[in-house]
Image: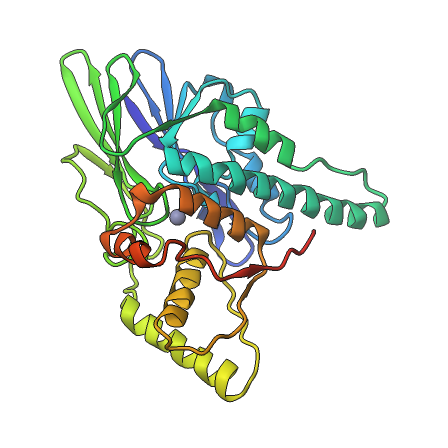
Length: 332
Ligand SMILES: [Zn+2]
């Protein structure tokens, strides 16, 4: 067995020479019997078309991958699945039920963005008398890639192939997120690999807290925010309430909250709903201006198995804790 990170590219930087850059999570396990397992297939998200060339360089042949095991639905972990399917991946994508459902909307949305960015980019190219380019993948490619998914429950070993079992344990980072715990038996040797994906905070407003994962021989983990400490949720929520009161109640103004990720948006919606329920805020109008977020909220509603006790308790008195929001649809 052989484990590699396929996502590290070297760039020639005029100021600092060659610098390695991580381009979306992807790790490859090659088994002795020739089978290949990919862990996550993340997209590097940057501005417009600048990162497009980096995303197209995979570092492996998608047709050789037998299984893709996915830790969670965020695009920096799942975003290139439609691209590898387009290039001939014909294996199975194994993930939790909730991650599968979130991927169905998030990858389609990502495909739509790729098409949109390419139209803009091609307008620029046309002015420079250059031929048009194709998007890395389209919404239709994303929809096609969903046929390769298999959803499995948390905490139950699932047989991937002969000698390989995977168990997902909750990380509390995003609905459906899990540590990918692999048990690989080759001859007499058993190797346990834990691929953590992203791990959530101990206190999430909605999700169950991260659970300890089984002992492993090899742990592959992310370190993007490894040097930062998060503010406590309670302090963050009090600050949010304070800013809303000052802006929307005292000054009668409008507050715009940029919320870039699926998961984070639902936490903000849930906090706002709590303020209203507990009458800590007067009735103010709240709009969510992202169709993706509203669709994702509907997926959240489907997967109560991921909710923490507090959230389930709240639901006994308030059956729809994401309820009182209005969605403004902006068409792209
Ligand atoms: Zn994530």
